[in-house]
Length: 469
Image 1 (tube, one colour):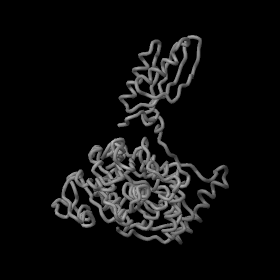
Image 2: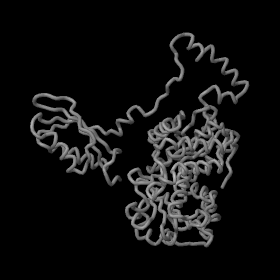
Image 3: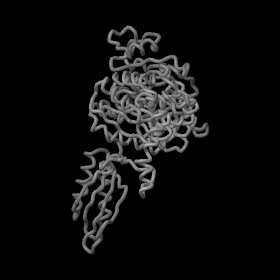
Image 4: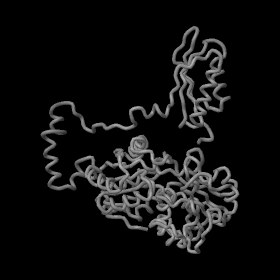
């Protein structure tokens, strides 16, 4: 839940008020007295007796939006005509579309774009399948694949409910990297069916972006698809998050003058994102890491370890700490949370080492209140847009895929992920670096191009397969 009014809960109220008197100023006062923020006020129709006005305002949540409407309706002389949720309006009819890149104005152009001329292009590809990258959309197209089992923080809501999120992902690909992405929402959560479906549609795409697929199935799906396909398979919830965390942590440690190789890191979350973050931190040189899940620290003495947790236990927690998260945080230099809201307090952060770094990335409510964490931490980052240092995957995946597609890469390697993180961190100049600016804005013009260039150079145009950390 938002703690302050947010554009995510922005509404436009169409109403009528008497033309004379203080009606307009009373509207603004009504919204503000209800705790809302007026962002626009437009007179859409004016008469001698009545004014029709659209009042646009931001609320904290849907209940707060209704309270604002009730407050407006209570103003003397106000008649409410219509209330529109601006977020829903943006989604009406979907957010993306297919458009033709070539004109089809006459018979000549039609005969080249389609039959009979297109047959020549098809036969050229039949003789050499690699020409599909040069002569079709394959060179610039990504499939955004989900089964709807782990959508945002909403859980297992199904493929139809996941579609607006996947549309948004496709829009981000286009906006930040010029990539044509398409949502593929699968009505199955069977691993074999998902793998087979992606395998048979893969010829039409230059890359596969797995999205919002629950753990541990996502690990097997990604592993099997990497083995089957000759195009990159990238699970953004895992690797996109890992890239952004490593980039931000690189800069945060510069702020506090500490080294990744020597700091003590405590992590909360051993799912898809947590495991990927851990793997990339280890690949980057981190050595002292303790990972906690909802049962406490992951260690080799636990008798409930599946394959993923067993790997974590074998590669972390050398001292065999077996306590809870609060104990693991004590004396730690870094906390990275990709788990659940409200599991730590400001008092817990106070037990950390001098100048601690806190990444509380659970959304929308972080593992610890950012305001409470700031009382004790030198650097705080969250996944939210209303605090400094937002860790957002859009900083990574557009540039990563731009580089992969440009290099015609056949897979994703650890070196590419590390290169992407390094390039993202370097976008923040030494002059800009500080406790409240360790990661650039998603709208920074250099982000996607820098990440793409680093991935492209690392790929070398010949990337094949994925090297496990």
